[in-house]
Image 1 (tube, rainbow over the protein chains, first blue to last red):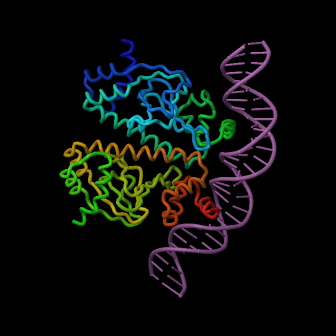
Image 2: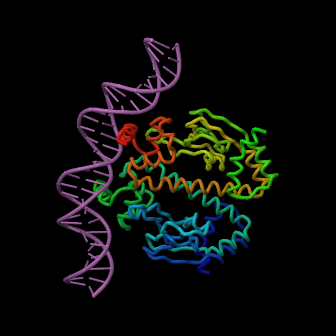
Length: 194
Length: 194
DNA sequence: AAAAACATTTGCCATTTGGCAAATAATGAA
DNA sequence: TTCATTATTTGCCAAATGGCAAATGTTTTT
């Protein structure tokens, strides 16, 4: 039952957003699949329609895309204990414009579109729980992005360090620089100045 | 029935996100109240728990707050044909940390918390429709904010002009400057240079 | 109309960040 | 280990933006 134990994090997380009885919990556990990704692996890619949702048990993802200049831009990072998916593409079943990539080795629990639909059809609270989770995640993104414009690059970097203390030195500078909205050299200089 | 005609925009908007029969539409119309706000009026204020949701029929809102330096920051603008509310505070019934203010004269349709709950209890599709609307609005915010970090101030200003062509010269510079993440003087210079 | 209050522009200069290329460091492959 | 590749740092200078205060312009009040 190793697999089942590894799902406790997911279940606890879901229970924060709604009630589930044991039967429902068991069903969710049966539908979830363990997936391990290595640092650098893509969970989903631009141009492809996402067919899975991931719950990040361990590790960190980033979501990125290429802008009109061809620069690769990291839109945001996703922490463990969160779901990762391009919600818009997943819901509408349209190709994503973003890449979702593991920036560290990741341990995931994934649901296929079908499993997700089954859960939605079987568990009456499912949609409500997922909606709350989605809404909360989006609000958090807005609240994190919004003040960044008013802060200078050093502050943005320090805030990142606070949120991901041990990540800054384990990922390519370019990921972080584009997330912070500065160039690699500027970030390098900011690092030095601290 | 003037009032009812004025509600067509709202109903059409709702119908984009789900089906409603005539009986349901009439109920929604009965629950909505017309509200006119003058430029500068607050729809809701920081520290207060929002008791209403607004559908903006005409006009433009801004959402703003005071940061730790005491600067007033405009977080985003809300266009007509959109709902305006601090979703988080409204849902959780907790005081908001933001002001929602009319930046032009506004013509609104508002729902009280009670009306909203009634609609939720009576119209089976209501929650689904509202969730879709909420999710879409939040995704749009993220997608608008996210690339701003990678653009210079002039580009951000030009993008704003494109979205709100006739607003830039009708609102205080300070609103716009803080939204763009620059100082008033910088914005003034950018304006001149165009 | 005049005064007061408020908003915007401007000058001057400092600071931050960018662009580019070369130097250095780190990583991975043979 | 050594070479090749990739990532990061650094120097040099240019461009963008900020800070502050004074000047100018606009709106509101009396």
